[in-house]
Image (cartoon, rainbow, N blue to C red; front, top):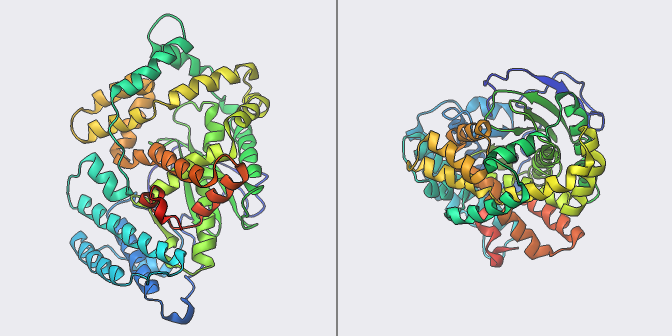
Length: 454
Ligand SMILES: [Zn+2]
């Protein structure tokens, strides 16, 4: 991903628990070359050459779309070789490559990972071709776009679904004035003071990391650094560097609520994006020598898996009762908040969480041209209980990332159903199924197809 965007204020801190390696204050380059992909065993696997061509196409699209290449840690010379080319030429090459990938399907009964790899590459390439068409000016509806790019479609949501939850919130947050005002005041009383942000995040990361390491084996050299940034449409971002390292950025444009400490620490770090990228690098790039996983195109099915696992991972690390205890005993005190309020806070947030699909619906109507930006802000305020400032930030996010919004909530629900069908309530089995999903190339559409669970 490019790093040309202005960052505004920037602090870098090293977290003692994570900073066994490089010194503080010098974030690594955005692109770190770790190793060339290992050659295929015997050098005869046609997928190796096809996968390398795919990487080159992803890098080429990155010249036209600054958000497209989210991470790349393959050979530096590949990036140099992937010069800017006309979109029509990329589209033609991608079409030809798709034909050759289809012809290289593994024989029935092949190793399940090999079968998953082939299907995944074909579908990622299909998404690349759709993104190129969009860059060439094609207009897709919200659903067409999410299907093409993320291999999933979120069913429409009727306002009745949100109205019943809003009615429960009216009871949970009694008092005069509009519900949005009452909720905004309630939540504003749970902001982490700026001076306590570092300590609170550190406590949250310690909690997420220790729970993850108890169940998932990670390379000893894995680590990340945290930066606090401004002027972004997102609230947090993991920039994977390769070599088992991430830079995690937290946006401080708006005050950060106490629940965001665990959410962001798990989502961006453990067992979310950082762990996902580390396991992909370990299992697929280093152990198997598959080059295509050294690049991560943001607008692709991989993002539904990435965001879905990062969000579901919060609950894997912290089942609700355990989370409440940890918030009350560790996070609220670290943030200087009264722990006695933790139970009510999370009860109310549990209801508000059920409004999350209102964000998808606002994005769908906005991108499909049914409402304008102002009406989208109003929709988010009314049905999603976004404060005006957060609603405007959300519309800015939708302008930049469009139907990507489905990856968070629909992705989480799809991952949850997949893991819970495989592992039930057993915590240890859930961790195992979760880590297996992180380390394998599985498509969103295969999360719901039980016959494809291999
Ligand atoms: Zn994310």
